[in-house]
Image (cartoon, rainbow over all chains, first blue to last red):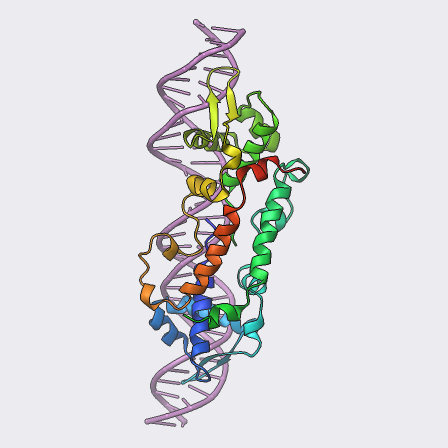
Length: 134
Length: 134
DNA sequence: TTTTAATACGAGTATTTAAGTCGGGTTTAA
DNA sequence: TTAAACCCGACTTAAATACTCGTATTAAAA
């Protein structure tokens, strides 16, 4: 219950790795090997993050990825939603075509919980995960 | 991302419904019809909650379910875990046979987030959801 | 200038988990 | 004795996640 997806895990592992490499480029291959992550899958995730402007890619041999300035300040809510889509505990928070709506008897309390979770992720920055000590 | 399962939703909807019916029994059929929930599925969930001692079943015609004293005070962490299994954002919080472990670079920060979520659910009681106004 | 090692990207497959169904059994009020 | 409820395990279906593959593009280095 309430597990993160692998993609998100891989993304965070990669970002932390890239960040800790300072200015040198990191290839998908290198990162995948370091953490035993399927290379193709990681590659796609990295490509997605390039599109989202979180990292910068350099092509060609000796190429790789590096962090883009500003990533550290990005809120986890934004990061998660751009990578994985909407973040809501129940569908009615997302698409609202539930047959219930007027009838549902737990909507309010669930929304409250949902807000709590969102608030929590809103207060965490990507940098908190990629830079935190230990 | 981070969605509740239908089973859990159905369980909470049913509990709230049963609770609001006071002392009279509620059948699975009646509840399923009220909220357009698949009856068989709801029935199984109710049966599970009987086993967990959250509700009491009365068999035979005119039978049904009623709330057991004490349910309201049960913490949501316990409730969720008894119904759905362990509540952790990453597998290493659950079974610990991750090939990484020593190698993983985001373990600490993720654990922190995990604790936050657990703490939040720890502070919510089933009764907060089944009894909260509107 | 050719090779090689990297990213880019869409389509496709496989696996896992969640969701729902079915059939037969037990209980008990009417 | 019947009917309406709960009980329960096995099964099927559907959806989401995880992963793979093939091909194209880029650019450093031999």
